[in-house]
Amino acid sequence: MKCENIYLTRHGVRQTQLPDWAEPYEEKPFDGPEYDFPLAHMGHLQAEALAERMKDIPIDHIFSSPFSRTIETSIPLARQKGISIKIEYGITEGMMSAWFGKNFPKLPSAKERQEKYPEIDPDYESKVFPSFPEERADIWGRLAKTISLLTEGYGPNIMLVGHGASCLGASFALLGLGRQVNVTFCSFHHFTRLENGWMLKDVDALKHLKDKNLYVPLLKSVSARK
Image 1 (cartoon, rainbow, N blue to C red):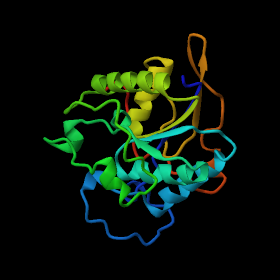
Image 2: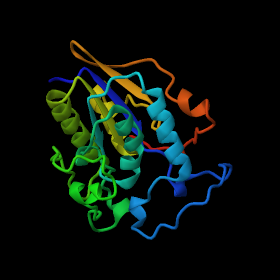
Image 3: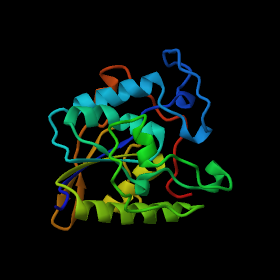
Image 4: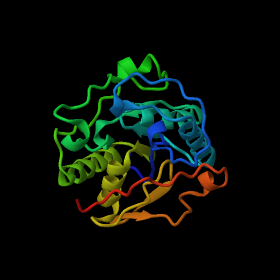
């Protein structure tokens, strides 16, 4: 079934992304790989606020990047809708050597993830895998391929939970290069299919966060032209 509606968000804030003014919470020590930081407590609250905003919106499939922070962002919505989370590498973080060094990050498989996150669908096979290392243009191309495959194969309403780079890439794939969404943590974006493309619905992307004092602005912007 073709997709008619796409909902897009970036993961909630992780501890290393909290600004100085954010209310402090005691976080559990994290001894895993730095690139796979889980959500901060505030990030979990953001994910819950997003799910609450979407309580009356039908969602048929949830696709998440394979990182902990995107999976944890997906969980409140998955529980609310009673559906599983599909791990899709096509919407993962930008695989740039400046961020990950010389190697593709070692992430658990979906079946391994399910031991900690039972909401994950262990049988879903990712449609796209990124190359390593990637340049910006590679990320945009990967997202274009991923969006094409997911919107032709799944629907009518899908949720994508990604990262700053993959959310930008998704918006470029849907609207055209240079047109982008606000990739703030747990912001809300709704795209609807037109006869010859996609349209971004005019909604307040941050209302659910600001209403609960959970809005965390980006510490630095992401440039689409680098």
